[in-house]
Amino acid sequence: MAAEIYSNINTVNPRHGVKQPKYPWSDGPEYITQCPIQPGGKFSQRVIFSEEEGTLWWHAHSDWTRATVYGAIVIYPNKGTKYPFPTPHADVPIILGEWWKKDTFEIFDQFRASGADPNVSDAYTINGQPGDLYPCSKTDTFKLSVDYGKTYLLRLINVALQDILFFSITDHQVTVVGTDAGYTKPLKVDYIAISPGQTIDVSLKANQPLNHYYMAAKVYSSANGVQYDNTTTTTIFYRLRSLTDNNHPIHVPLCISTPLFFTISVNRFTCANTSCGATQSRLAASVNNISFQTPTRMDILRAYYKQINGVYGDHFPDKPPLFFNFIADSIPLIYETPSKGTEVKVLEYNSTVEIVFQGTNVAAVTDHPMHIHGTSFYVVGWGFGNFDKDKDPLKYNLVDPPLQNTIAVPKNGWSVIRFKATNPGRSNIMCPFYFVTGVWFMHCHLERHLSWDMEMTFIIKNGRGKKARILPPPPYMPPC
Ligand SMILES: [Cu+2]
Image (cartoon, rainbow, N blue to C red; front, side):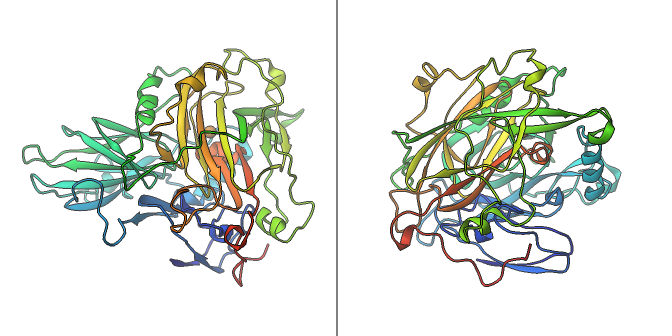
């Protein structure tokens, strides 16, 4: 697929979850795989689909432009194949978004200047409309007419910037059939929880008496001081299991060559005067205590491909500098300040990778929807508390773990993912959905945490032979 992007803002438009085998040039994040498309500029993206089937989406990836620049990508079953469930009468994207009355650039600038949390949005939206509880939306509220007895496939996408959302339909149960463009075993639920960046496909049977029924989304709040039941969201996230039938086999790496342990933290920088924020401090975030500094001179992919020194370092650590009780109620202030760096983790082609994401209670505590570009991964385990390397692996699901590209790491808890750093493609059906050679961004999909630099970058080295080598860049990339 080719997409021509004309920009009137400084932006880039990656395809969230598309694996782009060997072709990171259209992946999108600014200063990671390309420089931004300048106002008035245009850029041709080549989007290469491989094993994805189901729902993905695309969005801008520059500051908070993704607040309004996004859309669904629907990938139907290949010709001659069918859905692994009865074919729905119709399929409908349901995009859950977030809306500010102000210009999002202004919101973003204010947020950066304050050093604190951003202003909360004015509304959440379903397919662009806040709904009939808002006078401005009364007549335009998204409505879906369904015929009694028929089944519909709803393709839910959470494009909201800051929040995990609950979604449900009055008096109806839905059946989850897929997530992040991979099929799951059917799971009947009253409501779903969906994190920013994630897609969930649900089938809806119109089996209730003729009437109007609300579709509604609500914020899942895990902020401190708010009463909540954390297990409600986590059990929903982690009850998903891969379909695993003959047409949809899975290949969970069983031997791990590269075990990684990543702490994900909200941090704080302090300063003597108000130069860094109104309260002489500003919130920050980190992975393994490094607050990732995005290059400004050129993107990492260009520097890697052209072997230009000085843009990034290749010493991203495999574990945090210090192990302590990550989820303690009070953590010494000295642990609040992260270091800064532009370090990438270099992976050998074909390496089998496990990442333990450990949430911490350093300066703030919440769930973190972690997203990796260029791959899907198997979510093999999760839990609350500190990860126990002796006991917790015994509970991994290595049989039918879900294949996702975004995973919400629970508040005061951990999740474990596995993937293989190799090159996929239809010709290589033994290794579907695995990481591809190139430069791939990893970040929290809560936009404020991303802005605070809860992010890092992987480089997957070329393998042997032409088929395992990164493809050359297109003739035109936006200049830096
Ligand atoms: Cu986060």
